[in-house]
Image (cartoon, rainbow, N blue to C red; front, side, top):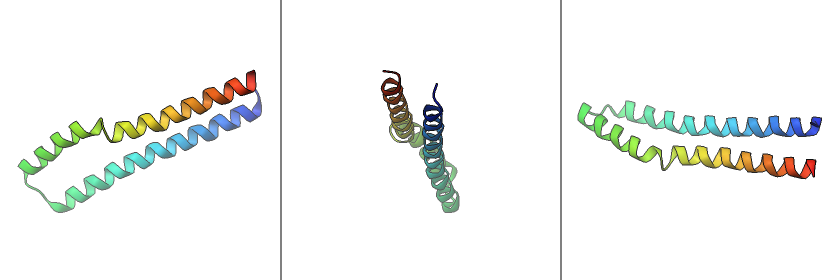
Amino acid sequence: MSIGLLIFLVVLFAVALVGTFWVFKEEEDKMEEHKEAGDSPVAENKRSEEYEQNWLKTGLGKQAVIYGIALIISIIIGIVIFM
């Protein structure tokens, strides 16, 4: 494998990792907002159920896009280099 490809893949991995931390930071900020609001246990339970339902559409979707793009770019670069 060429050094250029290895460097590219490491950079691509780093970008995907930064994207992952960005999504987690968004979720952490949401949790902090709710913590400051000081909701009742009933409201917290309702919000928890909504979060579980929405995570597949929002956070997990963002993660799938980030790693899907990284995978596609890696495959394209690998094909270009080795063809």
